[in-house]
Image 1 (spheres, helix red, strand yellow):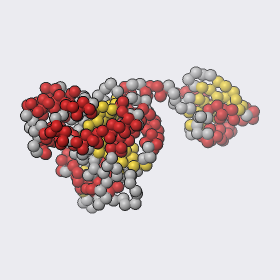
Image 2: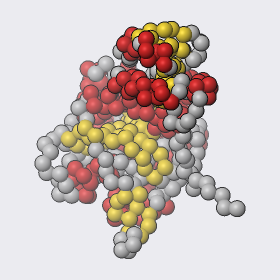
Image 3: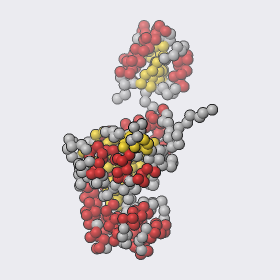
Image 4: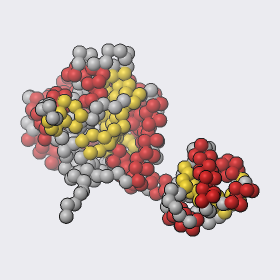
Length: 431
């Protein structure tokens, strides 16, 4: 017998999980909009050339792609940054800075793992136009505020790709391939020890003495002034622009009251090649669980159109965020604070129309209200209400209709009150 299951790495979203996702969105979207960002939706399907333009042929190993019925090469988007960059690169009407966001699904042909499926959702915020580090500070601040909105404390680890490139070149990386291999090694620093990182850096082409120096810089976690003191004059001259941008960033984070939540971390490189400036990762406080990240990419829009706009952004995975919230018990607390859901039961066919009227009055007040859409007797209706996700049952019978006084039962406690419909509406209406 055929088993109709979901494809590997894909999952259905059931009622309970969807409620949690909607709650997350209701918390984070107002924060994003409060910073002045406006929502867009890049197309789910792109021309394959669009997806390959920055990442090259290697991206074919990581994405879903196919030919349509006309033989055109297409692919499912693997992130939101490429689509938004393409949009603004051909938009000559909107003045800078352009501030956009999306909360949407994307697809990658990765190995499925905890908190990550082949179809997954992200919230993504992008700013186009400013070259100043003010914009980088703003998206970092936004990321921290998004975490706070769902009840999580976070810390942000900050680095700079040009700083790292300057350091590894001075220390002995002579070619682009060696620089890239050094970056790949640094990206593993939080998961491996000093000795293994040292070996990886030497394998990437750094001399033993230089690799040991870089390992010491990575694990020392010095602040910006401390880092400058550790770098020699030769290195400082090579990376002065990057250090100046980090100085501006740190001052701006202080003005945003976020400096205390941020630290310098030279292991942060961000895996995607289009990053070319300040980069960062946001973690749950006291753990290595990454919840959001981003950075500057000044050259991506130039690939997709004639409008060249420097850019910076931040994004986070919804599934990863749900995992973190589950771990700290946020969803358990939400279950104890269920919103009001009323089941309006009618005693017979004669009172059905009246029950519908009561449910309609509740709905107009923003209260979730349902009545039976099956031909059930009162006892069956109340049994259904008690077994479901309802908080209250309201009985509409001939007596209630004639007197205007209704019985409202709180299902969890069993407490009942008899009040007029107006009093019930006022009691149940959310503030």
